Length: 217
Image (cartoon, rainbow, N blue to C red; front, side, top):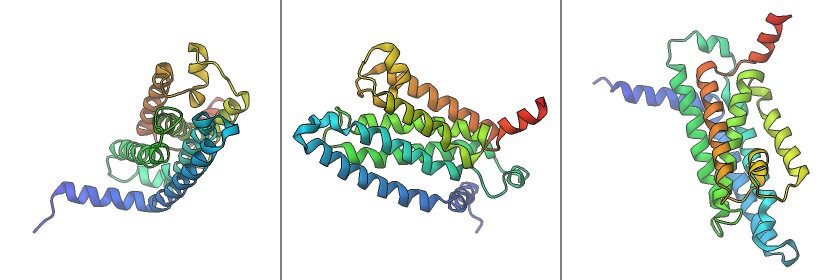
């Protein structure tokens, strides 16, 4: 008996994820979540660190590292060869990013369930979506190997600036360090995630910046 087309597509997509390091990504994500939970619990328990607010380093760093783990999986060993195969790549790319974002957000949120409202689970989910969008969009321009770089530089710059305000302007550029109650920070993250995912599903990872630069030179 022939298998349904959906079953074959699901099996192929599972093989696609395996070939791109899906298991390694998942293991790294679980380890990262455990470390985030341990670090967050320890920081929040120190009286001289200011309680739940002390979890800001975890909220800022853990989602960034998760997105960096995702970057290498956004392209295969030979991206141009894959493009030549008769597969619905736009659907697969969208599924790849959406599945990674959902799994990452779900796993990392477990590290902040003790107090989800104050730099806990909600902020971890928000930052995971934002950094995933940045990495997916960067993969289009820089390729999968360097897709982590813009998100890493941006995250480090925002954390080094250490903004304390929660006004609208600060919520826009410093969304990784905003409390989860900052509505505008969620809007910014939504735009980043949708834009990055859309760019990746349309064009894939392939260093478009280098191609554009070579055409202009």
